[in-house]
Length: 231
Image 1 (cartoon, rainbow, N blue to C red):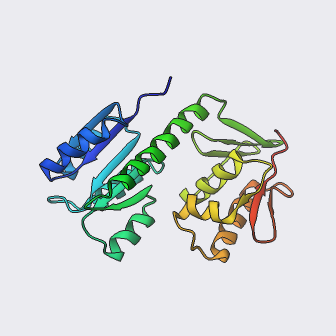
Image 2 (cartoon, rainbow, N blue to C red):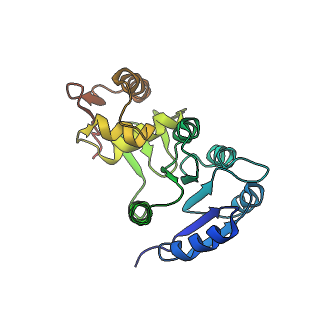
């Protein structure tokens, strides 16, 4: 049986908010819908949501400002941003905040359905994986917790940036197999157009923090493999 999923919807257009709530009820068991960023954030602080969908143009506070506050509280929170505008600045800011995707209004109904199928499938997979042990032994005295994103090396907790956490988590989940550069860039930056030197620099930082020999292996600039001796 699938885990029940919850959604926080933020949309100030009353009719659209009602329409979306009805449509999205096919995918989510619980939907809390609000018309302002302030009210939504107040409820977010006392609740747990699997997904947040927010408009950008909201009264008093921009939707991206809301996303930024939420991401500071919970960097792994899944977020979809919707807007009637296609401004590049909005799109780039959304990418910087690490959103799941950006949808423009009016919606393409099939695209909306496909997006909901994709995101709910991802959420259900996460719940399935969470049933398994979360701490992975990578080498002697080195472990990574997939739930808390904590890396311990010889008894010391290593400080990781958000992107370092994303990279390490993805490599650990696929330990001892190569992960293509394109997948890494899509998961970490939500873009396929990331300079190879940017990815290499991120890998080097994580490799240095892991500290054991051949911990992350490169396949001729096509992908990376994390070698986990504890598996």
